[in-house]
Length: 416
Ligand SMILES: Cc1cc2nc3c(=O)[nH]c(=O)nc-3n(C[C@H](O)[C@H](O)[C@H](O)COP(=O)(O)OP(=O)(O)OC[C@H]3O[C@@H](n4cnc5c(N)ncnc54)[C@H](O)[C@@H]3O)c2cc1C
Image (cartoon, rainbow, N blue to C red; front, side, top):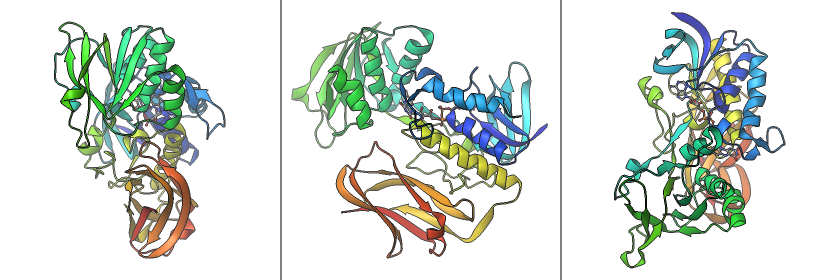
């Protein structure tokens, strides 16, 4: 058995930042385990710019952003294990495998989950029709074009308006393909406004809201899809059905945090985020297991992922040096009016950090709202927002001294 201080599972932006932060906060023997042959997670295939605006105050591409962290990791004594898949885990214990070492049985004083998320696929959204070739998730098509140098098709329809799909609408267009349109079942777009503008509007690619695909035709390769408008119950309206000729269907219908390992270790999960319940140090319900990045909840911006990684790394280092002091009464953080979820879901520590950042998403688009933080009836904090939208995560950073004498419950809500 190999003894380590901190084992980080996943070498994407969350894992890289977490490993660095654990090391810089005093953890001696830090291992970073990544199943891919390279570090960076999803970033090496994201060759567009738009990364690092907050942390580096620059617009970097995904590979450039990842490289800055990889270079920092190389300057430390962090052990990086590539091609290494973690297969099983429990508190303080991991089983991983790679072609060089074979099976690795690792005992870790703290574990950081940074496994990211995966894309939803066709079986998860149950589109009827044939099962021909030519149906890809947007991220897979991105990998084909940007990393393998292969064009998946020439006439493309995109289902779902998540950010990855929007970015790929532009990418296919730049490579000479015709993108027939983006079809979104909801009445509002699923991606960031900046991506709607820069990836669709700037290239005259139509976005059809309240539309879905009701059939896929073509036996060997996709030949046509049937689209239809949906009513307020999301039921397709028969009279609006029409066929669109295409050779490729891209799915951009949501991301799922990759938490099979977390569940194996009996980490409590939040049914809304799909990730572990975490406190302000990103520690899960299992002592010594931390989670950060898209495995905890799906983020829009990589800067927030790296920040969460830093917090988890510091938490793990403080856990093993016994610096974390738990509050006598933990504070449960709840989402009130028009709040879909809040992370962290619980505040448990004393003096962990001077600032606490809450990440939240709303249920519905609303203009001119106040985001308020309440302890019972008592107003602790308020901030005016011109508009809040479900695809755009909101950050609320407070000095932790505001939370010194609160009861055992906090509510964040959007008030009109
Ligand atoms: C197409 C696309 C475009 C984006 N565009 C932007 C943008 O313009 N600007 C921006 O700021 N953000 C953007 N993002 C968001 C940002 O890139 C992600 O939020 C970020 O990469 C998530 O980081 P992560 O480390 O949590 O996960 P990931 O990057 O997914 O990394 C997780 C890593 O964990 C590894 N792993 C998983 N399970 C195991 C296991 N069992 N054993 C070992 N390793 C494992 C995976 O191989 C992977 O390398 C984009 C994301 C995508 C997908």
